[in-house]
Length: 225
Image 1: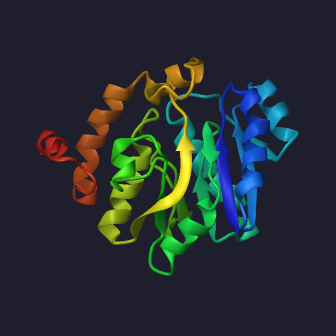
Image 2 (image 1 turned 30 degrees about the vertical axis):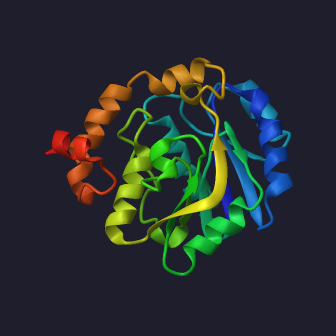
């Protein structure tokens, strides 16, 4: 079982196409859980028409994406799915995404980076923006909540690389649409996510020693030293 966790904010129009896409291309057993913000009622209503929907007890603020993933992992643990997938509502899952990711994981790897078909570092296997995570790897939280939004994925993969449980599933393709790649129109949610990018990057570099600087470029290593 894969618990597909989808933090959402202010994009009710994305709920139906995402669910339809997942249903069309996923062959392994799965469950979708949308995680909506308190007060974002149009979003919650749209999501509730198509999949399990949880309204969290806080309004969208710093660390919202990570908090929602962590909350989703906690509340779905009782369903005893072996895996969670750290998703979003601006993805298009490609056929075979799940089987290729699970095959890459085998019995050894607990954090499987999928190919987002956009980010150059992701396509080289350095990290994943959206990852399949085995529950046995999760101790207390999945993602560090200290960032405003950015770099939570890189930190997750950095720790997994240090532990020897990270792998990249090149053929597991989950396309990430984003204004940076000119594959999605800008909107207030994207603006919010990038507003403190510089501060998030500085925090990421200050913490990189915790996972032995895995996944950093030579330039980033010099900046973090």
